[in-house]
Length: 239
Image (cartoon, rainbow, N blue to C red; front, side, top):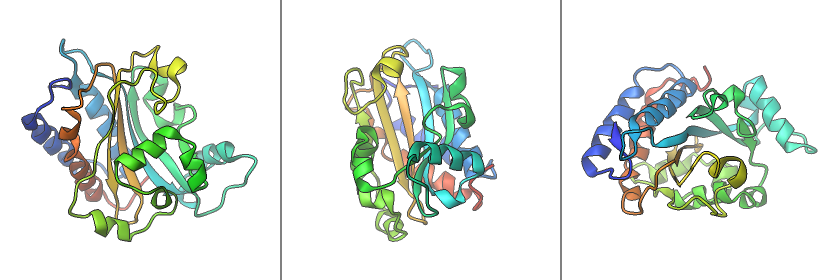
């Protein structure tokens, strides 16, 4: 296990290699996403060696028309009273592992299975999604309408890290009374990248220990390791 509060350069190299290897073991992006969430949840610890994370999640943007029926239903429910359309971009949960039993499979997640990103203005009204896109260097327009050229623009670069050092009371982190406070979430960290389709993937970690500002940048290279793992999976997205 790696100590999250004192995460170092050597830890980043080891963890990155482990995440890249996961890409050779699974036949779908959904299976990989769940394995990534399980691995991070199970291998990041606090100073006392206890699990550091309350929740780890893997998301990917995906067109509504390509979602399986259960995820289409979830997105359509959130979109009401509007009707969904085929190219509607949905922020889709592919992997999840956490302290609550409902957080260990995407089918039992409440309210986050497939979030319809209906417009730039809609995304701008979701502080955490907006901050995630901004800190990863992705425009809201590119989040709502994926551009394959974005992959080429970022192919050889690294993304910034989405980091909220103090989650309690932060306007960026929602569900303060329902999630942040009762589950002891102290910090939030996210890394992500662009796929050849122009779609975005992101891993978001909700930590029960404080992740210092000096530690967060060490997670930047993990975005490239994760993208390597994702690209090793066949074209199949859902298990």
